[in-house]
Length: 462
Image (cartoon, rainbow, N blue to C red; front, side, top):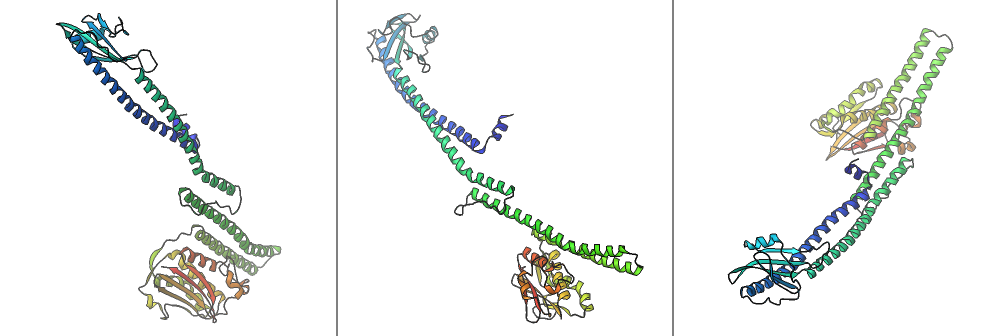
């Protein structure tokens, strides 16, 4: 398993803390290196200035063939001939050679050598910084070596390294702890949301995530999104439950009637006329099943997606497409079916008016209202279409006795039917379908008794 795959398997909090720790380590290392370089540069500059002063005094003494200058307590001098033999030396150095044969050879050829003796880490005793130059004394070449002790400078740098390491370690620990606490606090709502979603997955009904109302950060927006998703899931489950319940309830009656008709037909021999009547009755129930299944599927499709596709259509064509299939039914029943707009008595008033609507759903919705009016109502049936501003108002009315008052509050419920019509034709889905179409368009549906009949009105944005 690669390092990247291993990191991906770690918890989010652990990855965040590691990211903070690595980032802070780089920042602290860079900061410590900068501080160390600045302090070391300052100390080296001071040490080089002291070395230059000591070298100058030594050069003057060698040229003048004078005794070695006393120098400071931290400085050393040594004078060599061209072959590296020690001629004069400070008491603390005595006969010890400060230069290597390579250094002697380089200085003898005119080079100036400056180097350190001993190391900062690990700690070594008697650390020096020396500088050697060729000097002519009485016509003879000499090598003047000046050195200063680095003890105080090295001790200061070691102390600085220790302090930087200690401070960096404390800062890294503090930053990692703060990062851990911050990550845990930030991700705590996510864990709470996860537990809430797990509770819903276990079957707990009406579970919603506790989202603070006084915040609007990324976590709370996630909570609102999850709550919206839970609403949709619960609504989908409720629709599925209702669909199964409604289908089983409504399909039971026609299936029972068909079984009864067939049982009676098979109970004893029947004549051809009786068998024909039985088949016609069964055919009627089969057609009822087909109509009911189509209505349920259409209503479920519209309710589950809530999606409509608007297109620009002439209002006259929209209303005519809904009215035309019912004109023959109205004529056979001796009923008057008319389509009006703004009281003009015809469709001429809206010949050029266009609306944005989903014809696929709106035409059958109006058709269902017309079918209800022709089947259960009395007198003339009138379709009124009016556009006011950005609203389309469609009304289907008849001149019958109207709806029972106790039926009005539940008129748009699925399979809701007035008592007088329970034994008649129809599934009780027409008004529910019209209401669903109006809601999908962002509009409303209303049913009322007008005093001289009933009216169902769809009010839609267009």
